[in-house]
Image (cartoon, rainbow, N blue to C red; front, side):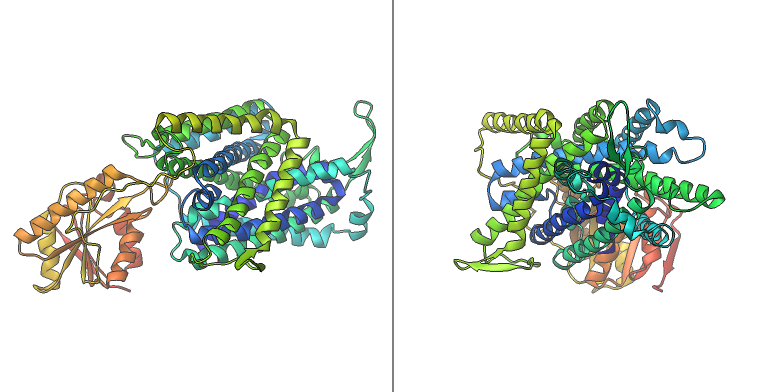
Length: 619
């Protein structure tokens, strides 16, 4: 659960670094209330995702919910809108990286064009290359950064409350009808959901939760509390430090504005630091620290967007909603290279030719469509499939014709739909980019389905390869032998058997690593077939040596963690790990061996090239 919270908060919490300036430029003195209203919609949406993701812990989010509730046509509609969100998440996060990095010594040129655009493109290209090569993520690092980010934001609120908070100033700078005007207020409300980007992460990560029914709702509730608290607190402090003022301009005429939406539009949190009451060395240290932290958080948010679009497009491709090339893996790195390159190309275009307001407005267009579909899907599932097991059921239900209808989802759906209408009416880029994007995607879907001889609406059931009749899942036994690569050494099985006695059972385990760019339930048919073939060879060699060998295949992000968990599940007395035939990264004391030695779920025996065996008892 901590890892799920860290990943979700890292994505949602990163939005404050750019959303604050975008919203304050239009909402002015009502910025805290606008964030509160948007936070209410976010709360309703978060509850919907908690129920949906706990029922269907799989990649796809609103697209997955719609597939189960409606059909493939609506599922693709939601998925294609969601793909626009991920592209915008990638573009927005990368776009703002250089602005915060410019606070660091020697990097001031990154604040202005063309340095900022070039730097953003370098960040994106670097992450594309790393993701194609199979960039791994550390749950511990993500958790540390999320907690550090949350702690920093809370500290800014506390310092601001002590040094600059002025309640009367907050009240006096609001001139409803003028600052902001009604049109400005509606405009701000329509883009405020940009502040809560990343809720789809909960769905993508739910498949990796140990107990989705409990972990997902708890993580959602914690993120909800943390985000609403931080956003309200920081927006109040921001308007105390950088209040709305009357500005007379020969070019633009007289109007009200706040430096949050003008001078500091691209780095609003740095603007708060500059005007919070710090000075001298302390101010410089604070700017360097916030600049470095924001740069890191936004860099990780960009990467999360790449991983999210990879998993979404893989899910759509596996359900024959996108052509097979979107699930094609790189021959060497086994990552969805085409998907990463294809969608990143659109992000490059947005970074190069768009601006801050265009990026924010377009995100709201896709997000509101996805959220509305998610709400509708959960309501439809309550009506069509009331008896389905729901590990988490959102509160606020009303019985109508024998069905428990979630009022929170109904209100949330109406709210997000009205927000989408406002985006379309008020933002021209939604008309000229968002709508054509949806038309292009739906047209492509129809052409692809027709050419494939498939129904436009009927869901395609994926057919997985059948397991051999004597392929057994791991049971509760006493010895576990991980198998690396395609070379099975019978001597390793014999050595392990000697440790557990003639009546013991050796479990040969093939761990199939799944890159973070793919969903854990991704097809990987060729890899699974190879793994089963290797396990069958191990079973035959073990029989020839007089050893009772059972076999099993496990999918995992972290092989060491998967083996440790499996050893505890089967009650293994020993893990016998031979590195003789392992790939270079696992020879001697590799990542897997290091993890097992650190966690020590049972006795660990490691056999190296020199045939020396080391044994460690559990701590």
